[in-house]
Length: 146
Image 1: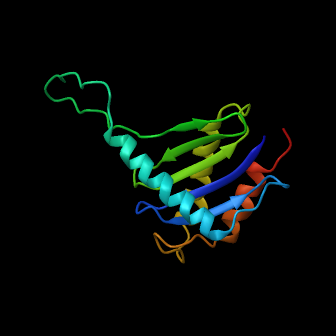
Image 2: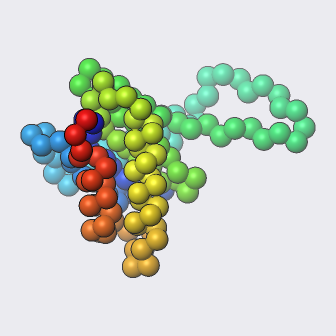
């Protein structure tokens, strides 16, 4: 599995977690990560409101499916997969373009987040994530041989 990095953005657009998994990548400083998180949050919010397809009338009693915004962005060097939780937290997973099943990988990262961060009684919502068990579990999942 070739995972470059994982970023977690809170519902207000603040960066609460970032970790690089691939050795040898160019290091970004903390300000660059904050700018990246804020910029992506804004673009994601704008893309949710832009809907080029006119909505079809729904039968009475049916709800309209929410628009999701940017879910994936791909270049020749990386693929960015975004998963937004029901509470508005965004998981940004940077992988190689050839990496299969990135949606499943980012959802598993969310499950690990739920198990080790949200169930931690000492974690405060919207604050930076400093949970050692979460770091270890993510490392065990994302840094393993293919």
